[in-house]
Length: 316
Image (tube, rainbow, N blue to C red; front, side, top):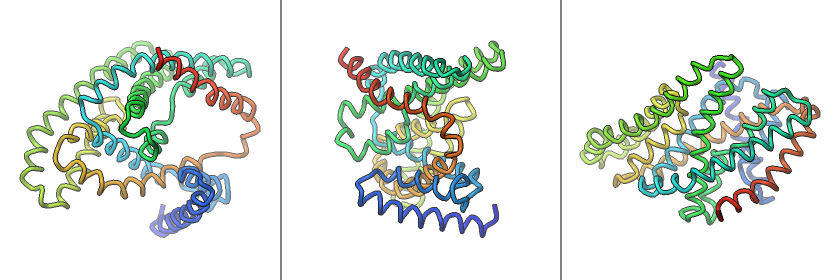
């Protein structure tokens, strides 16, 4: 992608996002819908004004990393541990119910066993990005139900890693590699968290204390810590989002955590616009007729079944 095409693509995306966002605000719709709709309209399956999505998607993914980093900055480690303990049973039972539902519906429409398992796996999970992006704008933020929701979403991210390993190795028939991959992931999480705590205690906090009056330095240190731990998590077989969340929560108790959070939000929003645009741009309207019926049924089940299941599990 040449510089001129990058500049032109950014012009189209951000000018179009401003126009679509204005319409969304007037009609009282979430801004996320505006960004996705823009991608559908001017992406390769729409007007084809922006066609090279690989770079935009990769850049937009940084917004997700920053989003989870900021979420970690806003939580205390003790509160997170208590929330995860309460969320584990709910996450396991709800995932099993939705996996079975998605598998059954896909099987009824004649999909293969592997395809049905993939559909069922997709039904298991909620969108961590959309949920966390919308959470601060609701009354749920900093309340018990909001913390429980965050715990469920993080546990679902861990389950997603395990499920993807199982599906990939099941398709290749390599059970030994699957066992090694699962063991590595289970060991990697405490290893990453423990290493992060040591680095924060003996490296980052002394640097922050010594140079806290250099705001530019603190900002760069935070970005480097966030992206560094995200990359470390990826190298250990975990998701980059989990690494970014750990990076945030390990410095949440530092005196400059709120300064970092406030100054990083505009940068996060810049990248998230690109991410949601790329999501919409990958939506191929030509294949909609092929999946319309099962999609509508699954969407109706999600809207009707999930609130009932979570209400029952949370009461229990």
